[in-house]
Length: 167
Image (cartoon, rainbow, N blue to C red; front, side, top):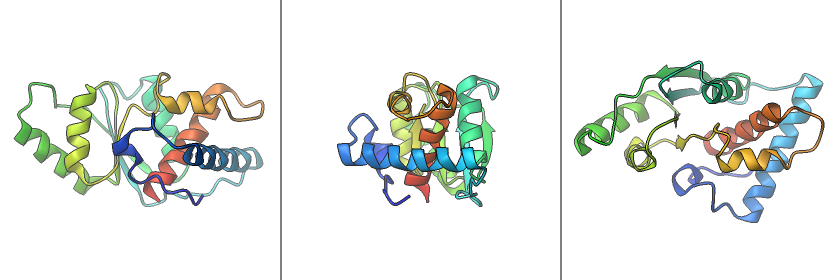
C-alpha cells in the first residue's frame, strides 16, 4: 500500500491519473485477497472518522462504516447541522472542530460546495460521498477481478482509498 493519495480528497477523484488509478486498484486487490484469506490487518487502527449524514442506516453510510471498521478505525455518526444558509464563519469553525476530532470526514448528502468549504478548513481529508453508487470509486470497483459481490468490490476500493489518504 504505497500510493499516497493524501491531497486527492480535496482535488477530486474524477481527475485521478492512470498511475493513481492503477495503484488504487492494486491496493484494492491486495485487500480483497486478504479478506478472502481471512488475513485482513487493522491498518487504520487508532484512526477516527466522522460520518456526516442524516441516517446512519443508509446503505452508503453502512458501506463507509464497514469499510473503515474492518480496517480497525472508529466511525462516529454526526447529523449535519450545516446548510447552504450557514454563515462562512460557522462553516469554518465547524470544519476546524471536525479536523481536531477526526482523521478524516465523509460527507454524504451535502451540497458539493459546502463539502468543499469544510474541506478547505478542516485540515484533514474530507470526502464527498465516496461510498455512493454514483461516485467514481463505484466505477473503479467494477474493474476488480473475482466473484466478489459488487458491494464487496466497492468496499475494497473504499478501503484502499482510505488507506491511501490517511495512512
